[in-house]
Image (cartoon, rainbow, N blue to C red):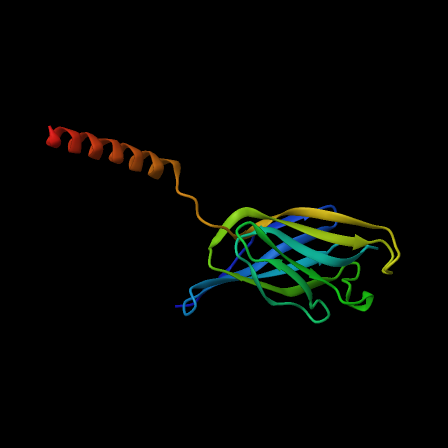
Length: 168
């Protein structure tokens, strides 16, 4: 069964934002697919690099036209990154771009992933550059809850005591 869920998680710093547009569970290969959008809300800055870090076991499966220069670390706590292939593909001031897609065997966790954007002040390769960052939802290995760990520990202690009493 494939379930599509619109996500409203967004992070914003200064004039940039990253939004998790949607995620869905792909029932066949037992994997989650995440689609992100970046928004350049500035009046004069150009955006040319996008990274999600950490994301657990990411596999880049999609990118917008002109953003095919990709990098990924498919380990636990890895990363996924996209780079514009030329200045003509940079996101102009007040523009947005979607189609950044990763897949992971892990479901979404709120605010786990940090995003990084590299920005240039004049739209040329030699301009002044800096980074923007924020948080957004993304794939993470689920951690057992504290209560579940406590119950498992108490259960193990009780089982050990029963075994010791029955052996006597």
